[in-house]
Image (cartoon, rainbow, N blue to C red; front, side, top):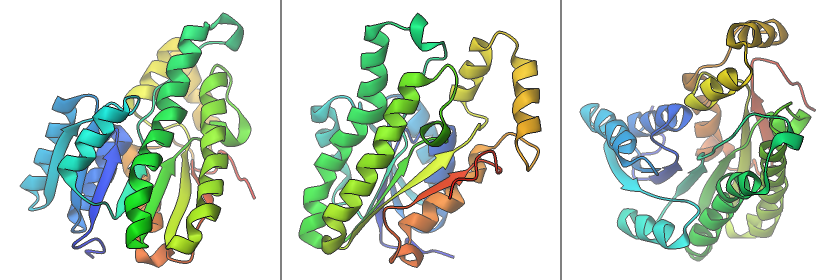
Length: 251
């Protein structure tokens, strides 16, 4: 199935685990994929994979905390049909042991960066009266997560922001939805495990708490993301979907 033939898609953090898996799926379904990442080499590897599979991709450096960097990357890729805000960063320690400089970086990447991306792409989508935005939050936004207080706050803010933008721009034919991953085997989760002090025990505890009995993999996420980005979800906006093996079951 090539649901995105003729569509241009941008995925921030496209060189990472979930971002890379998502970019590859979009490429396989016919999209022209803008692989945006702070790590240009990682983005280039993902773009090369897409092109090797007869897809279209362009790897572009993008620092989502810097509006000038965003504008330059978007100018290179052209008008968008789909934006996936996936880039993120975290540190793992109790809130009382964090410092304001760390809060500022967490907020800049996990919340303000997504605001920059929306602010940059919405005018074009409004003018074309069409667009899909999928924001990648976290189950931490829905239920909290020990050692991730500021990250959870940012992702909770992204959920609320997404619902508001969905309301403001529904009349323009733009949908905005949110996917919340649970624990997933990414570089971010690897850092989380190391910060816990006893990684094996942490993984065992998570695995016991997940009804489906395993930690997620990056490949578990693109199905939900591409659904929200597709015409199948044309009448779906302002919604939040957890992809977490049942770890959370929010109504």
